[in-house]
Image (cartoon, rainbow over all chains, first blue to last red; front, top):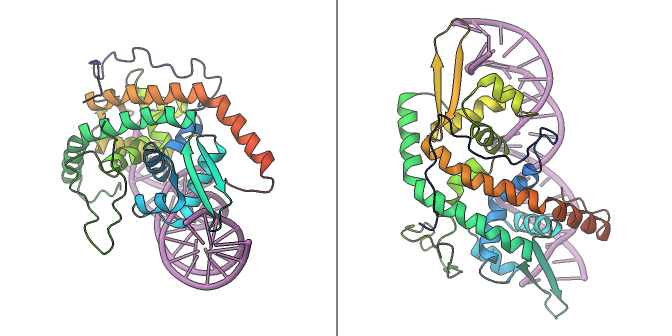
Length: 143
Length: 143
DNA sequence: CAGCATCCCGACTGATACTG
DNA sequence: CAGTATCAGTCGGGATGCTG
């Protein structure tokens, strides 16, 4: 809903002005850097969770269904390394650490939100398209 | 508002782990469906390329630096299956196929563009953060 | 040109056990 | 609680060779 999508002419001429990298200079103009981070399902879920406020390690693990401790560790490390998440250690008796989004990380939440909105909006359509495709192409394992 | 979730649904015992998805509360609600598609670097690059207009297979492969034929095939197939891309075969002598975004696919273009913009905007910062992190944490192989 | 079929290696991940 | 260390299994994805 909050996704205002101005009608874009489908297929035909389209191509209005999507010019992420004006030049073939850089093959992928940094898109991949982000994608490798944003595209990771765990990263996104962590970001979404942290968008609600600071969380501790266990809180994140409990909030994110299905993530292993190992993956959570790796995920927050990577996000920290990229400067999207700030990790703070409190030298309390039982060690305590909290994670929160940095400003950069917070700015990503808008995109994630937009992505989620788009997802919800087209979820059904995609599911239908898949069924349709699968029935039209039996025995085609495209995952 | 869509992403505002109350956080935590620990639930002691088994309980329901699959939320009805009535509300966009649950992060898992369709986000992954999109992410599995959008999050894929090749998918995004294909979408970006197709945003400029219809392309043939070889055109795509040449435009997208580094993609293997196998990955391009799989990528466009998946996009087609999800109804984001339309595949048209022209029974010419040397087979000719073109791909173009469907309306749904075109609507994704905005998000992809946003992602690309964000990427460009924060590219340098992320790179710096990484260097900084790496020098502060020597011998830490986080990918 | 536009694919499909195979082989194959290394990275990603989960499960498990141990530490500060 | 908040991790680190290890090991094993899966699979993404590149390289190569072959149709239509």
